[in-house]
Amino acid sequence: MKGSQVLERLRKSGYKITPQRQEILNALLGSGINIPQSAEEIHKKVIEKYPHISLDTVYRNLQVLTDLEIVSKLNLQDGKNRYELNYGEHHHHLICLKCGAAEAIEFCPFKSVDIKKIEEEKKFEIRRHSFELFGYCKICRHQPEGTEPGTFEGTDDQE
Image (cartoon, rainbow, N blue to C red; front, top):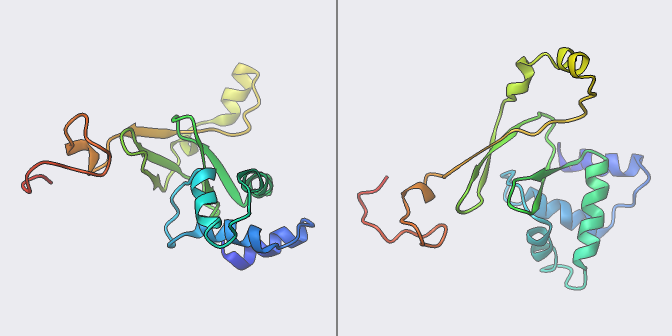
């Protein structure tokens, strides 16, 4: 979803396009790579330009954006919710258990599942699903235990 589409969706839904809301969207856009971020990470970016914006304001705006399906709220099993812009295509993530990096995988394994059959058999109405894969990223899988994420104190012959 492009920035102009996001703004138009907000307007059509009756929301004002405030500078703070635009800055929250800019923080989500980041460097063009769609990396899920916590509200706290987004807040740190927004206060660089708007130092008086509260974390609560960021949370309220993220909820509005989630309700409008502009943003997806992800629970990556680390106790923090993360947020990312919806670009229209449903996807899942690879999540590093050490550094918390999340990388999108561009397919959904549930597309091959007969959802209607499950709903009928289990008498359960499915509204959404989550499928995330947990492991170690390229950097962290070669780190000795006890080292900080993203640092490596080994030799250069590692991958």
